Image (cartoon, rainbow, N blue to C red; front, side, top):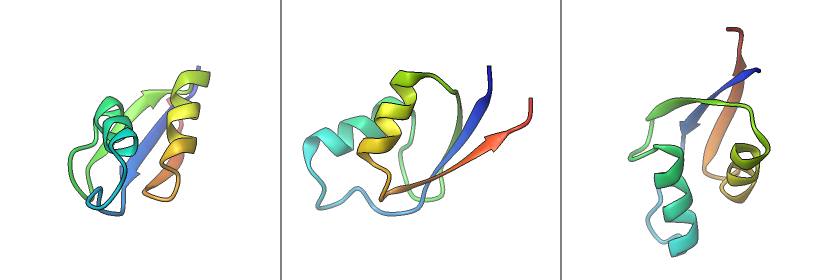
Length: 61
């Protein structure tokens, strides 16, 4: 399965609690934090909820 590199590029301040919780669930804490996650439907759904706050790129494993 593919791996996704997710980087937070915008602040979570002034965002809804659901969006802040989604960033936390993805493992992002502050701007420029990056995490690698497996490409699953659940992760894609979380990314879609906070797409305006993160950058996503595929990583060749």
